[in-house]
Amino acid sequence: MTYFKHESAYVDDGCEIGEGTKIWHFCHVQKGARIGRNCVFGQNVNVAGDVVIGNGVKVQNNVSIYTGTVIEDFVFLGPSCVLTNVTNPRSEVNRHSLYERTLIRRGASIGANATIVCGMTVGRYAFVAAGAVVAKDVPDYALMVGVPGRRVGWISRHGLPLKTPDVSGVYVCPESGLRYREIEPGTLRCVDLDEEATLPETMRRGRSTTTTSSTAAARHDGPKSIVTKNFAVIGVAGYVAPRHLRAIRETGNRLVAAVDPHDSVRILDRYSYEIRYFREIERFDRHLDKLRRGPEESRIHWVSVCSPNYLHDSHIRIFSEGFTELHTEVYRRTLAGSGFSIAEARPSVEFVHSIRAARK
Image (cartoon, rainbow, N blue to C red; front, top):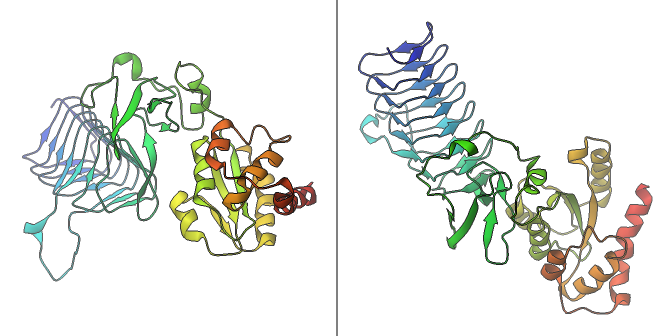
């Protein structure tokens, strides 16, 4: 036997298991399963018959891989993630001959407690966040979050978000320095390394997590990453404009809370599932105060104002006085409007300033 099997695990006759694979406590590999080399199966994993698993796959605890699933090389399946093989299961109706095919392509990662509805293809090096529910095909390098799962950006082969492209449309991984480009809308490719090629040995030891990627970016010649700031937005004119939200994201920052007296929750939900949305300024202010007392990574660094297009330029000019870190050149270009007078912009800006002053 060229693979390791813990004494509590069961491996049925008729399986194919590659050299160097490790099968840990209470696992069950059923007849007909085919598993490649150097895989690792954590505690309490079930691999059904006729499942095909490539080389270098890592499966964490409490995962069931059902018939119909094909997993390519170097896939990561997080703890308790869910894979299915029938879209309309009924206990009284036998659909054993109708199992649907689910394909998880090379290098993809499925986060803890995420669900992949059967019949889908998860693209190469895609990243499905913890708890997400994927019910449609996922492109290569897509970062998928939420319920239902939706793409909120691109992620590198090293698992770090690709934030803002340079003027030629090239993204640079802040850890590896590998370059990426959209060859057409919704299709990303690595410029420096073929998607099917194995990573060079020098790139196979990680140096960054998503929380340290901004620091790591400084070691490379690509675009310099902006240290992420947490934003809260006040919709002073009765709405939070999509352009304002996009400006925050495109400058490498994160919106975590917003208040708007009118219903803009659909806009905010499309932007990010992390936003806490309020319709009452008092509840919004209490939430910000709570975050201020919490850990640094959850604190609100900036409270910004979202106003109608004709006031954007004036607001930017007023806010820029003493707030240069907030309004980068990219932020200015994204928000720039036709620009009315400062006097017309001042009432809503003073509203925000009064909130800041009350919190001091």
